[in-house]
Image 1 (cartoon, helix red, strand yellow):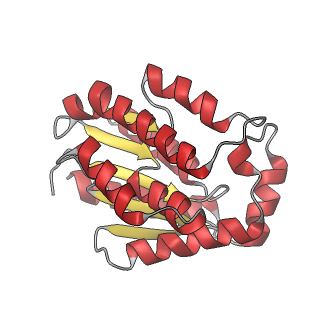
Image 2 (cartoon, rainbow, N blue to C red):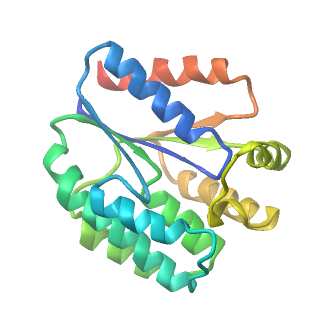
Amino acid sequence: MSKKPVIVFEGIEGSGKSYHLNNVSKFLKRKKIKHVVIREPGGSKNSEKIRDFILHKNINFNNLTDLFLYLSARNENYNSILKKNFKKKIILIDRFTDSTIAYQHFGMGLNLKIINLLNSYILKDFKASFSFLNTVSTKNLKLRLKKRKRLNRYDKFNSTFYSKVQKGYFKIFSKRKNYMIIDSNLPVNVNKKIIIHKILDLIN
């Protein structure tokens, strides 16, 4: 594995993935280690514009339209950020290709072959080095979403949908070796230590 890995934080809403990614970024900054942080959808200037469009609470897209918008944002990220930093800096990504499969295939039923084909066409040889799969119980998911001041439309699916997506993640990662499951029902400081320890292992 490259010492400038691509590290992805995956998980459904309320799983703590964004919190832990930001904590890792702060840690790397303190250590003066160069890295890039993006989120999906979002990241580059154009991708952030697409993000606002995708997640707007008053918009209801067809599932296939959703897929194309997510992939459009990813294409912008690849061409403006990911390609030029690949193997040159550590790259931290808040959701990536596995999210597309978990949400759009397992959650919404879209064709997996199409998703994989389009991802391969966009990203070419770019891929994640390691992933943290953050998991959360239905009870804690509901509690955490209630605490959010602003909800986007992906925060408003029912429990059945989130359960399908999380089970989809487990199916995806059951065939992998380069990942770690983080149980976000545990105290956050416990998980922070686990993740930072693994980050040090990945970059040293």
